[in-house]
Length: 197
Ligand SMILES: [Zn+2]
Image 1 (tube, rainbow, N blue to C red):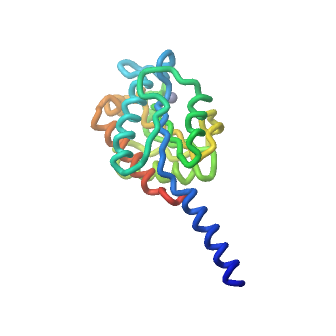
Image 2: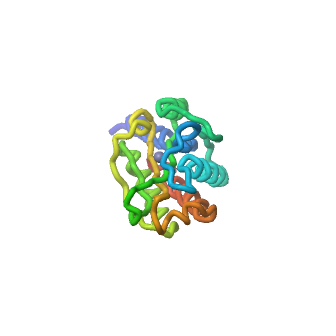
Image 3: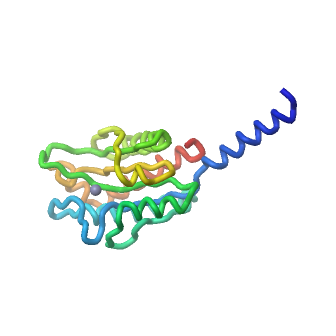
């Protein structure tokens, strides 16, 4: 192999590393406005999603990331508009924040959904970081054909932070300290894959 070919190969490698070292995170607080998400009194999913998203926003900025929020107030944003916001930032990753509910009140824990291969790596990293520091049950990661994941071009995940319907987890979901722990864990999981997606 000539030195010239080797050099151009190296350049291709370097450029692809730069292209995947994302520095922008699009944070998507689930639901909002007329769409409350799951409601399990006293909890409204949309309110908890926004709170965790704001905490995640602060935590990521502290780690040097640029951030974009698809909503920062209690307003309704269409799913396709959320993906369109993310697609305006070609190098960005997309993290959607949700809480879960189930009529079976023993069901609890956090889980992360993905759809693409790069999304899977991000999901694994976030789930591992949450498992390490969030005192609830890890339900693992899971492939899901969700609209926001399908329409978002970059690596994308949807984190279900916990069950507001759970007898044991509901009060934790209502605690800001618990929600801070969740946000910090998600931020660590994102930072751990910077440059690796
Ligand atoms: Zn939801």
